[in-house]
Image 1 (cartoon, rainbow, N blue to C red):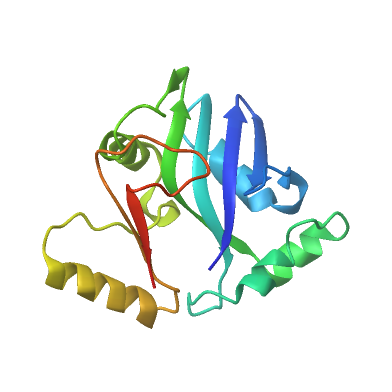
Image 2: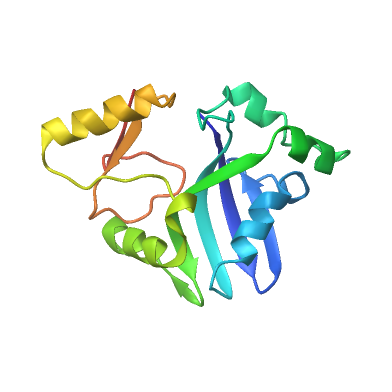
Length: 168
């Protein structure tokens, strides 16, 4: 229910890209600041950016998208409609590609790098009841659903494949 982003960092240079790899860095200064604060020199993160209501519930996708493509009055729009980003994958870190590593390893590296408030909540379980409760809680919080991923899958750019399912 947010805007998919990929964030690249090399030193202090941070670039933010949309799902279609259009650069949207200028429209998302809070993402740049958050990624600069991470303890890494170079990285590529995959995530979701949302505009949230004051109670933490996500605003509609169309509202979040008002921030992208914005060139004028970015600071005014930032004050009116701040973005929150939640990363769900780490593809590259300090000279090492993680694309061919199993998802579980990438998620562990992400957990070591990004503070909890900057990551997509995740539950690893084989308990159907726990998974159903996690989905219910996400829906109650205003999200459209969950993504279930295999911990053994490597990163497959641009395709869902058989290693993950979107649950609504």
